[in-house]
Length: 123
Image (cartoon, rainbow, N blue to C red; front, top):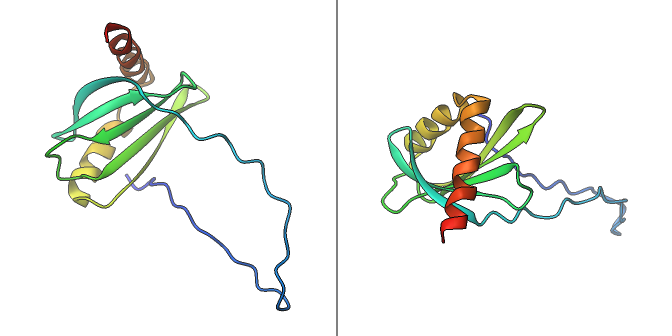
């Protein structure tokens, strides 16, 4: 499990003046506040929210989780899902959770997504 989200900024060197390059369209940030449900992944506790796009989830380290602060984003892609994660807590704890998330079947992914939506209707 090493599919963490990597964000890099690249600066172009010019002739002393800044040049504006055409920007790629920027996707709107995901709003992930539907739920939550509490789950255990890799032996540690996590809080799961689904996102406004109705297909993605954010999984945040729960209180007392040694991986904290850490967040995973699970995004549905072509009948499967992609995982990215970012944080600076205990790497062993976040790796164990990431490994557990990677082994989820598409049906388990769908069930977890449905659980967040069901939890939101109860509150």
